[in-house]
Length: 399
Figure 1 (tube, helix red, strand yellow):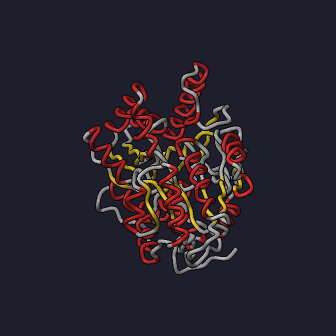
Figure 2: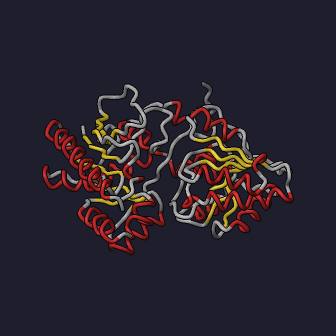
Figure 3: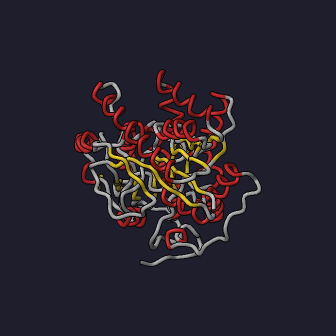
Protein backbone atom coordinates (compact mmCIF):
# COMPACT_ATOMS: atom_id res chain seq x y z
CA UNK A 1 0.00 0.00 0.00
CA UNK A 2 1.23 3.49 -0.87
CA UNK A 3 1.63 5.90 2.03
CA UNK A 4 1.49 9.72 1.87
CA UNK A 5 2.30 12.42 4.38
CA UNK A 6 -0.02 15.39 3.88
CA UNK A 7 1.32 18.63 5.39
CA UNK A 8 -1.29 21.37 5.65
CA UNK A 9 -1.30 24.86 7.15
CA UNK A 10 -4.71 24.19 8.65
CA UNK A 11 -6.86 21.14 9.32
CA UNK A 12 -10.33 21.30 10.92
CA UNK A 13 -10.57 20.47 14.63
CA UNK A 14 -14.19 19.42 14.27
CA UNK A 15 -17.06 19.44 11.80
CA UNK A 16 -17.85 23.12 12.48
CA UNK A 17 -14.26 24.42 12.16
CA UNK A 18 -13.98 26.67 9.06
CA UNK A 19 -10.24 25.96 8.69
CA UNK A 20 -9.68 24.54 5.18
CA UNK A 21 -12.88 22.48 5.46
CA UNK A 22 -12.34 20.70 2.13
CA UNK A 23 -9.04 19.05 3.16
CA UNK A 24 -10.62 16.15 5.13
CA UNK A 25 -12.75 15.30 2.08
CA UNK A 26 -9.65 15.15 -0.10
CA UNK A 27 -7.85 13.01 2.49
CA UNK A 28 -10.87 10.70 2.61
CA UNK A 29 -10.78 10.45 -1.18
CA UNK A 30 -7.07 9.52 -1.10
CA UNK A 31 -7.87 6.74 1.34
CA UNK A 32 -10.65 5.66 -1.00
CA UNK A 33 -7.92 5.17 -3.62
CA UNK A 34 -6.26 2.64 -1.32
CA UNK A 35 -3.58 5.06 -0.06
CA UNK A 36 -2.63 5.37 3.61
CA UNK A 37 -2.51 9.02 4.72
CA UNK A 38 -0.97 10.77 7.72
CA UNK A 39 -1.65 14.48 8.29
CA UNK A 40 0.86 16.92 9.79
CA UNK A 41 -0.72 20.23 10.82
CA UNK A 42 -0.45 23.02 13.44
CA UNK A 43 -2.52 23.19 16.62
CA UNK A 44 -4.01 26.60 17.42
CA UNK A 45 -5.12 27.45 20.94
CA UNK A 46 -8.27 29.34 19.90
CA UNK A 47 -10.13 26.09 19.22
CA UNK A 48 -9.84 22.86 21.24
CA UNK A 49 -9.39 19.70 19.21
CA UNK A 50 -12.09 17.06 19.49
CA UNK A 51 -10.95 13.43 19.61
CA UNK A 52 -9.72 12.64 16.12
CA UNK A 53 -8.07 9.89 14.12
CA UNK A 54 -4.55 8.90 15.22
CA UNK A 55 -3.40 9.67 11.66
CA UNK A 56 -3.74 13.44 12.35
CA UNK A 57 -0.60 14.78 14.04
CA UNK A 58 -0.63 18.34 15.39
CA UNK A 59 2.41 20.28 16.49
CA UNK A 60 2.15 23.01 19.10
CA UNK A 61 2.30 26.64 18.03
CA UNK A 62 1.18 28.50 21.16
CA UNK A 63 -0.68 30.85 18.81
CA UNK A 64 -4.37 31.62 18.68
CA UNK A 65 -4.45 32.71 15.03
CA UNK A 66 -3.34 30.87 11.86
CA UNK A 67 0.14 31.57 10.57
CA UNK A 68 -1.25 33.25 7.45
CA UNK A 69 -2.82 35.95 9.63
CA UNK A 70 0.36 36.90 11.50
CA UNK A 71 1.73 40.40 11.06
CA UNK A 72 5.16 39.75 9.58
CA UNK A 73 6.08 43.41 10.03
CA UNK A 74 6.33 42.66 13.74
CA UNK A 75 9.62 41.19 15.08
CA UNK A 76 7.57 39.16 17.57
CA UNK A 77 5.88 37.35 14.68
CA UNK A 78 9.24 36.30 13.27
CA UNK A 79 10.30 34.90 16.65
CA UNK A 80 7.03 33.00 16.82
CA UNK A 81 7.46 31.85 13.21
CA UNK A 82 10.89 30.44 14.03
CA UNK A 83 9.37 28.35 16.85
CA UNK A 84 6.53 27.33 14.53
CA UNK A 85 8.93 26.04 11.87
CA UNK A 86 11.10 24.23 14.42
CA UNK A 87 8.10 22.47 16.00
CA UNK A 88 6.63 21.45 12.66
CA UNK A 89 9.96 20.17 11.34
CA UNK A 90 10.59 18.21 14.52
CA UNK A 91 7.27 16.39 14.33
CA UNK A 92 7.70 15.87 10.58
CA UNK A 93 11.07 14.22 11.17
CA UNK A 94 9.57 11.94 13.81
CA UNK A 95 6.88 10.83 11.38
CA UNK A 96 9.37 10.19 8.58
CA UNK A 97 11.48 8.10 10.95
CA UNK A 98 8.46 6.09 12.06
CA UNK A 99 6.86 5.49 8.65
CA UNK A 100 8.04 4.80 5.14
CA UNK A 101 6.38 7.44 2.98
CA UNK A 102 6.20 7.21 -0.79
CA UNK A 103 5.33 10.88 -1.19
CA UNK A 104 4.84 14.13 0.72
CA UNK A 105 2.03 16.45 -0.33
CA UNK A 106 2.19 20.06 0.88
CA UNK A 107 -0.94 22.16 1.19
CA UNK A 108 0.14 25.01 0.51
CA UNK A 109 3.35 26.64 -0.75
CA UNK A 110 4.27 28.21 2.63
CA UNK A 111 4.94 27.14 5.27
CA UNK A 112 3.86 23.58 4.43
CA UNK A 113 5.88 23.53 1.23
CA UNK A 114 9.05 24.47 3.11
CA UNK A 115 8.45 21.65 5.61
CA UNK A 116 8.04 19.24 2.69
CA UNK A 117 11.17 20.54 0.97
CA UNK A 118 13.30 20.03 4.08
CA UNK A 119 11.93 16.56 4.81
CA UNK A 120 12.35 15.59 1.15
CA UNK A 121 16.03 16.50 1.21
CA UNK A 122 16.62 14.79 4.54
CA UNK A 123 14.81 11.53 3.83
CA UNK A 124 14.87 11.29 0.03
CA UNK A 125 11.08 11.39 -0.33
CA UNK A 126 9.63 13.23 -3.36
CA UNK A 127 7.15 15.99 -2.60
CA UNK A 128 4.45 17.93 -4.41
CA UNK A 129 2.84 21.28 -3.66
CA UNK A 130 -0.79 22.37 -4.02
CA UNK A 131 -1.00 26.18 -4.43
CA UNK A 132 -3.87 28.38 -3.35
CA UNK A 133 -4.68 31.82 -4.70
CA UNK A 134 -2.97 33.60 -1.80
CA UNK A 135 0.30 31.74 -2.55
CA UNK A 136 0.46 33.05 -6.10
CA UNK A 137 -1.62 36.25 -6.14
CA UNK A 138 -0.39 37.73 -2.87
CA UNK A 139 2.57 36.12 -1.09
CA UNK A 140 4.62 35.52 -4.23
CA UNK A 141 4.72 39.29 -4.81
CA UNK A 142 6.67 39.92 -1.58
CA UNK A 143 10.46 40.07 -2.03
CA UNK A 144 11.74 37.53 0.50
CA UNK A 145 8.65 35.31 0.65
CA UNK A 146 8.26 35.23 -3.13
CA UNK A 147 11.81 33.92 -3.54
CA UNK A 148 11.14 31.23 -0.95
CA UNK A 149 7.95 30.13 -2.70
CA UNK A 150 9.88 29.93 -5.97
CA UNK A 151 12.48 27.61 -4.37
CA UNK A 152 9.78 25.39 -2.92
CA UNK A 153 7.97 25.06 -6.25
CA UNK A 154 11.11 24.54 -8.35
CA UNK A 155 12.28 21.67 -6.14
CA UNK A 156 8.89 19.94 -6.11
CA UNK A 157 8.20 16.82 -8.16
CA UNK A 158 4.79 18.21 -9.14
CA UNK A 159 2.97 21.50 -8.67
CA UNK A 160 -0.80 21.83 -8.53
CA UNK A 161 -3.12 24.83 -8.34
CA UNK A 162 -6.73 25.02 -7.19
CA UNK A 163 -7.61 27.09 -10.23
CA UNK A 164 -6.70 27.14 -13.90
CA UNK A 165 -5.62 30.77 -13.64
CA UNK A 166 -3.20 29.89 -10.83
CA UNK A 167 -1.69 27.17 -13.02
CA UNK A 168 -1.17 29.61 -15.86
CA UNK A 169 0.48 32.13 -13.54
CA UNK A 170 2.86 29.51 -12.15
CA UNK A 171 3.83 28.54 -15.69
CA UNK A 172 4.35 32.18 -16.67
CA UNK A 173 6.28 33.04 -13.49
CA UNK A 174 8.58 30.04 -13.14
CA UNK A 175 8.20 28.11 -16.37
CA UNK A 176 6.94 25.09 -14.42
CA UNK A 177 4.20 22.67 -15.30
CA UNK A 178 1.22 23.11 -12.99
CA UNK A 179 -1.94 21.00 -12.99
CA UNK A 180 -5.42 22.01 -11.91
CA UNK A 181 -6.53 20.22 -8.74
CA UNK A 182 -9.90 21.43 -7.42
CA UNK A 183 -10.69 22.14 -3.78
CA UNK A 184 -14.22 21.15 -2.88
CA UNK A 185 -16.35 20.62 0.22
CA UNK A 186 -19.43 18.45 -0.28
CA UNK A 187 -22.29 19.88 1.75
CA UNK A 188 -24.18 17.49 3.99
CA UNK A 189 -27.83 17.76 4.84
CA UNK A 190 -31.02 18.46 2.96
CA UNK A 191 -30.55 21.14 0.29
CA UNK A 192 -32.98 23.03 -1.97
CA UNK A 193 -33.65 21.11 -5.17
CA UNK A 194 -34.22 24.04 -7.53
CA UNK A 195 -32.99 27.58 -8.06
CA UNK A 196 -35.06 30.61 -6.98
CA UNK A 197 -37.27 32.49 -9.42
CA UNK A 198 -37.59 36.22 -10.02
CA UNK A 199 -38.51 38.18 -6.91
CA UNK A 200 -39.11 41.73 -5.73
CA UNK A 201 -37.85 40.76 -2.27
CA UNK A 202 -34.47 39.16 -2.99
CA UNK A 203 -32.43 37.72 -0.12
CA UNK A 204 -28.70 38.05 -0.83
CA UNK A 205 -26.05 36.07 1.05
CA UNK A 206 -22.35 36.73 1.56
CA UNK A 207 -20.54 33.84 3.24
CA UNK A 208 -16.84 34.08 4.04
CA UNK A 209 -14.18 36.19 5.68
CA UNK A 210 -15.13 39.81 6.40
CA UNK A 211 -12.06 41.45 4.92
CA UNK A 212 -11.39 44.26 2.47
CA UNK A 213 -9.78 41.82 -0.01
CA UNK A 214 -13.09 39.97 -0.19
CA UNK A 215 -15.00 43.06 -1.38
CA UNK A 216 -17.33 43.15 1.61
CA UNK A 217 -17.46 46.95 1.86
CA UNK A 218 -18.18 47.26 -1.85
CA UNK A 219 -21.02 44.78 -1.43
CA UNK A 220 -22.53 46.83 1.38
CA UNK A 221 -22.36 49.99 -0.75
CA UNK A 222 -23.91 48.12 -3.67
CA UNK A 223 -26.76 46.90 -1.49
CA UNK A 224 -27.44 50.49 -0.40
CA UNK A 225 -28.12 51.19 -4.09
CA UNK A 226 -30.18 48.03 -4.63
CA UNK A 227 -32.53 48.74 -1.73
CA UNK A 228 -33.56 52.05 -3.31
CA UNK A 229 -35.36 50.22 -6.10
CA UNK A 230 -36.06 46.98 -4.18
CA UNK A 231 -36.99 48.14 -0.66
CA UNK A 232 -37.91 44.60 0.44
CA UNK A 233 -34.42 43.29 -0.38
CA UNK A 234 -32.29 41.82 2.40
CA UNK A 235 -28.55 41.15 2.74
CA UNK A 236 -26.93 38.72 5.16
CA UNK A 237 -23.22 38.52 6.00
CA UNK A 238 -22.13 35.17 7.46
CA UNK A 239 -18.55 35.01 8.71
CA UNK A 240 -15.95 36.77 10.80
CA UNK A 241 -12.94 38.94 10.08
CA UNK A 242 -11.10 42.16 10.88
CA UNK A 243 -13.62 44.40 9.10
CA UNK A 244 -16.78 43.07 10.76
CA UNK A 245 -17.13 45.90 13.30
CA UNK A 246 -16.52 48.67 10.75
CA UNK A 247 -18.99 47.08 8.34
CA UNK A 248 -21.69 47.08 11.03
CA UNK A 249 -21.00 50.76 11.70
CA UNK A 250 -21.16 51.63 8.01
CA UNK A 251 -24.51 49.87 7.65
CA UNK A 252 -25.81 52.14 10.42
CA UNK A 253 -24.30 55.22 8.77
CA UNK A 254 -25.88 54.34 5.43
CA UNK A 255 -29.26 53.90 7.10
CA UNK A 256 -29.69 50.32 5.88
CA UNK A 257 -28.96 48.45 9.12
CA UNK A 258 -32.54 47.08 9.48
CA UNK A 259 -32.14 45.31 6.12
CA UNK A 260 -28.64 43.91 6.77
CA UNK A 261 -27.89 40.98 9.08
CA UNK A 262 -24.48 40.05 10.47
CA UNK A 263 -24.40 36.46 11.68
CA UNK A 264 -20.73 36.05 12.52
CA UNK A 265 -18.91 32.70 12.35
CA UNK A 266 -21.20 29.67 12.23
CA UNK A 267 -21.03 25.88 12.07
CA UNK A 268 -22.08 23.46 9.37
CA UNK A 269 -25.77 23.36 10.31
CA UNK A 270 -26.06 27.15 10.23
CA UNK A 271 -24.26 27.28 6.88
CA UNK A 272 -26.86 24.96 5.39
CA UNK A 273 -29.62 27.14 6.86
CA UNK A 274 -28.00 30.24 5.35
CA UNK A 275 -28.11 28.71 1.87
CA UNK A 276 -31.69 27.55 2.32
CA UNK A 277 -32.82 30.99 3.51
CA UNK A 278 -31.26 33.01 0.68
CA UNK A 279 -32.14 33.48 -2.98
CA UNK A 280 -28.77 34.55 -4.38
CA UNK A 281 -25.12 34.33 -3.28
CA UNK A 282 -22.77 37.27 -3.85
CA UNK A 283 -18.99 36.71 -4.11
CA UNK A 284 -17.40 40.17 -4.58
CA UNK A 285 -13.82 38.93 -4.08
CA UNK A 286 -10.81 40.88 -5.33
CA UNK A 287 -8.15 38.18 -5.08
CA UNK A 288 -9.40 34.57 -4.77
CA UNK A 289 -8.95 31.88 -7.38
CA UNK A 290 -12.10 29.76 -7.01
CA UNK A 291 -13.77 30.33 -3.62
CA UNK A 292 -15.38 27.31 -1.94
CA UNK A 293 -18.60 29.26 -1.55
CA UNK A 294 -19.09 29.11 -5.33
CA UNK A 295 -19.29 25.31 -5.42
CA UNK A 296 -21.37 25.32 -2.22
CA UNK A 297 -23.87 27.70 -3.82
CA UNK A 298 -24.08 25.40 -6.84
CA UNK A 299 -24.77 22.42 -4.58
CA UNK A 300 -27.56 24.43 -2.92
CA UNK A 301 -29.04 25.47 -6.30
CA UNK A 302 -28.30 29.13 -5.59
CA UNK A 303 -27.30 31.47 -8.46
CA UNK A 304 -24.11 33.47 -7.93
CA UNK A 305 -23.14 37.07 -8.55
CA UNK A 306 -19.34 37.06 -8.70
CA UNK A 307 -16.38 39.12 -9.81
CA UNK A 308 -14.20 38.31 -12.80
CA UNK A 309 -11.23 37.30 -10.62
CA UNK A 310 -9.13 34.14 -10.87
CA UNK A 311 -11.32 31.30 -12.17
CA UNK A 312 -14.54 32.54 -10.59
CA UNK A 313 -15.82 34.51 -13.58
CA UNK A 314 -14.70 31.82 -16.02
CA UNK A 315 -16.53 29.08 -14.10
CA UNK A 316 -19.72 31.11 -13.64
CA UNK A 317 -19.86 31.74 -17.39
CA UNK A 318 -18.76 28.24 -18.45
CA UNK A 319 -21.46 26.50 -16.43
CA UNK A 320 -24.13 29.26 -16.64
CA UNK A 321 -24.50 29.55 -12.88
CA UNK A 322 -24.92 33.30 -12.41
CA UNK A 323 -23.83 36.77 -13.43
CA UNK A 324 -20.24 38.06 -13.62
CA UNK A 325 -19.11 41.62 -12.73
CA UNK A 326 -15.90 42.99 -14.20
CA UNK A 327 -14.82 44.05 -10.71
CA UNK A 328 -16.12 44.66 -7.19
CA UNK A 329 -17.14 48.21 -8.10
CA UNK A 330 -20.34 48.94 -6.12
CA UNK A 331 -22.20 50.23 -9.18
CA UNK A 332 -21.44 47.05 -11.14
CA UNK A 333 -22.40 44.83 -8.22
CA UNK A 334 -25.65 46.71 -7.68
CA UNK A 335 -26.61 46.39 -11.35
CA UNK A 336 -25.90 42.66 -11.32
CA UNK A 337 -27.85 42.16 -8.09
CA UNK A 338 -30.90 43.92 -9.54
CA UNK A 339 -30.57 41.98 -12.78
CA UNK A 340 -30.41 38.68 -10.91
CA UNK A 341 -33.53 39.48 -8.90
CA UNK A 342 -35.39 40.26 -12.13
CA UNK A 343 -34.02 37.38 -14.27
CA UNK A 344 -32.14 34.67 -12.34
CA UNK A 345 -29.41 32.82 -14.23
CA UNK A 346 -28.84 29.18 -13.24
CA UNK A 347 -28.35 26.05 -15.36
CA UNK A 348 -29.18 22.71 -13.72
CA UNK A 349 -27.15 20.74 -16.33
CA UNK A 350 -24.26 23.19 -15.80
CA UNK A 351 -24.44 22.53 -12.07
CA UNK A 352 -24.13 18.78 -12.64
CA UNK A 353 -21.10 19.26 -14.91
CA UNK A 354 -19.41 21.54 -12.36
CA UNK A 355 -19.90 19.12 -9.46
CA UNK A 356 -18.50 16.28 -11.56
CA UNK A 357 -15.43 18.38 -12.38
CA UNK A 358 -14.83 19.25 -8.71
CA UNK A 359 -15.52 15.80 -7.22
CA UNK A 360 -12.68 15.17 -4.69
CA UNK A 361 -12.51 11.50 -5.69
CA UNK A 362 -11.48 12.46 -9.20
CA UNK A 363 -8.96 14.94 -7.77
CA UNK A 364 -7.48 12.22 -5.55
CA UNK A 365 -7.07 9.82 -8.48
CA UNK A 366 -5.48 12.57 -10.60
CA UNK A 367 -3.00 13.37 -7.82
CA UNK A 368 -2.07 9.71 -7.28
CA UNK A 369 -1.48 9.09 -10.97
CA UNK A 370 0.68 12.18 -11.15
CA UNK A 371 2.65 11.22 -8.03
CA UNK A 372 2.95 7.46 -8.61
CA UNK A 373 2.75 7.14 -12.39
CA UNK A 374 0.04 6.60 -14.99
CA UNK A 375 -0.05 2.90 -14.08
CA UNK A 376 -1.46 3.70 -10.63
CA UNK A 377 -4.73 1.84 -10.13
CA UNK A 378 -7.09 3.13 -7.50
CA UNK A 379 -8.85 0.76 -5.15
CA UNK A 380 -12.48 -0.04 -5.98
CA UNK A 381 -14.65 2.99 -5.31
CA UNK A 382 -16.13 2.74 -1.81
CA UNK A 383 -19.73 3.42 -0.99
CA UNK A 384 -20.37 7.15 -0.83
CA UNK A 385 -20.39 8.73 2.59
CA UNK A 386 -23.39 10.90 3.42
CA UNK A 387 -21.23 13.99 2.85
CA UNK A 388 -20.34 12.84 -0.65
CA UNK A 389 -23.92 11.89 -1.45
CA UNK A 390 -24.87 15.48 -0.73
CA UNK A 391 -22.69 16.55 -3.66
CA UNK A 392 -24.67 14.37 -6.09
CA UNK A 393 -27.51 16.28 -7.73
CA UNK A 394 -29.87 13.26 -7.75
CA UNK A 395 -29.53 12.27 -4.10
CA UNK A 396 -31.17 13.98 -1.15
CA UNK A 397 -29.68 13.27 2.26
CA UNK A 398 -31.61 13.68 5.51
CA UNK A 399 -30.13 13.90 9.01
